[in-house]
Image (tube, rainbow over all chains, first blue to last red; front, top):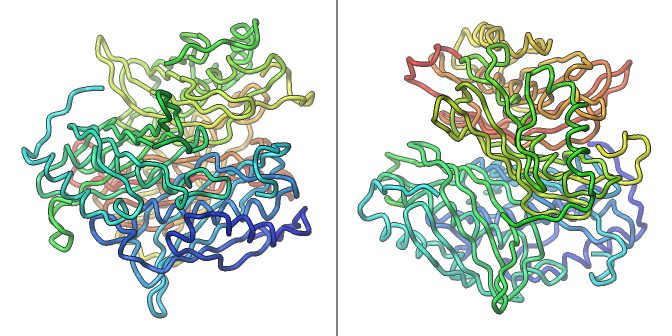
Length: 153
Length: 153
Length: 153
Length: 153
């Protein structure tokens, strides 16, 4: 992966503050992992009350951490006054989402002034083993000059 | 939309039983709406603890109901002993997910022996108004002869 | 589908002029069909030199007409000085692309100032029969103030 | 990328024979590059008659080589009697497709008995420079026991 230069010196604090405002992360028990320019991880311990009918974590739960890992990877490279918005994503499921916990690793593929393309890999961790669970390809958008949205989000 | 002939006379009960096993639906407060051959709706009242940083429902929460509305639309047309599995989906976000509640309307586009293609429209309802919030295009798979998975899921 | 109001009185001429500049359309023998605000069709007679290994039209050929039908549906609603750019698309293949000819029907799902979401249905026509061949969900972008790109494209 | 074990000792000849049957490749002037287990490259010299309205290669032309690079990467790991079929793909465009030539690099992300997930990176080459042009995430299917389709495709 190329090294990226953040345009906002306060990028890391901005990512953390925005993540803290995502109420869904508290509800499902997800937390920020690695936070680097263009690279953000989100972790989610397994919980039996977030499952689909076979007892695996629901694909939408996998999506929550994959989408936000992409969104914050993108936001880390945006202007200080930009808000980040998900335009769209595609998720391929590779294996059942089970194990002790999931980690979504969002990485910027191509940063842009308006649009940023990201990819996320979601893996399941159990003991020492790591299993790929899903892969996402996403388009994120920088919204600027929108005082109706909380700044820096 | 074409009319579909279910291959399993017990299709409706099977959809309802499987939905009832999705613990995530109870956790987020979603419920089944319309259940017809090739067409399943899932409703979700707005909840402030399922949001992203701007106070809108998180795209992954939208995905939970969109993906399962597609999955159950597909399952309604599958063989009695088939389990349904999401292969992949793409979601485009059209507007902020806010309002009194969301409804995801999953519809079968093309049923198949192994793969079924579905589309879902997610709308936000507020008073009498209905606003499109997201659209999904998804690929679902029928798994047969898998006694390791609970039958009929 | 909702009725759309073009913002450019010369929208139809602009769509036709831009299509005429796509050299690939001449190369593969595609032509414009219906041209309406937010709705553009592109037709492609079958040709044996555009096929994949089984003798069906290649998925990339299907993509050429699906993508451009979305692009011109989007362009028909854009400002007079905007150029249209494909951000991304997803294509699901529903049946082998064979028959006398294909028609791609691009429709605007949600127009926007910067981004427009479109869907295209591609059907194969043979005698009186019409078979769905593919479905596309795409994101298009309006580029304004780009004198480096030919205006009105 | 993990190392893959082909299940068909004749995998390389099978990939080359199938590619040779794709008439569209001759029509657009594409050729096979690297052919390895789970990794296939396809090259396309720039041609002015394959362009969209701005003089860049059309996204559908990019798709032709990206889709087939994924398809043959998948086929290289399939059973000797399997035919490969594209189920769906998503393509994100990262930069205008111009330069002396394009190379699509299809790689297997997760091989499976029925479904294989692949990713392709498409780059433009000009002098010594390589520019990412597009990225694809695709689902391929192995069809077995289909004597109606030419074997080994």
